[in-house]
Length: 173
Image 1 (tube, rainbow, N blue to C red):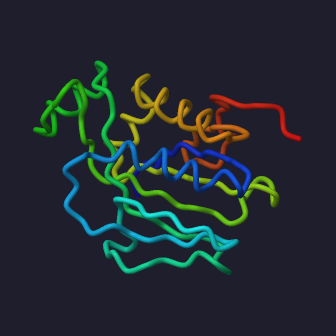
Image 2: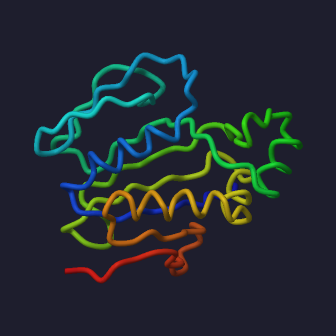
């Protein structure tokens, strides 16, 4: 089995719509999938440029512990992202690279605190996992996302059972 590194953003349920709308801004503008309507626990609905199980049927998260979205995200091309793009034959456009699928598991509730929701962005391949660890630009995208979303914290997880690394956080209430 390969590496599965992830960025975990823990936030209050009322901040999830804002976080998902911020994530949507990271999608490539030319994405050619029908919009995905997601109804969150509590009834709020967001429309996203992603898929769920590679389909665009509406998703209702009510009563579910976890929902996985298939995201396609674009990241600034720092040295690590440029090397990843070059090795994979991916274009660098306007200083940014679409790195491939990044899966987003939404955990209701978070596995660390039952008062929170966790947005767990995990790499689709071992190569992408190494990129997640090596790229300061990708790390900044996720910590900026956590801050913009009113998150409690952003953690980096190597999936090895060891403690996650705190990258950004605020004092919990």
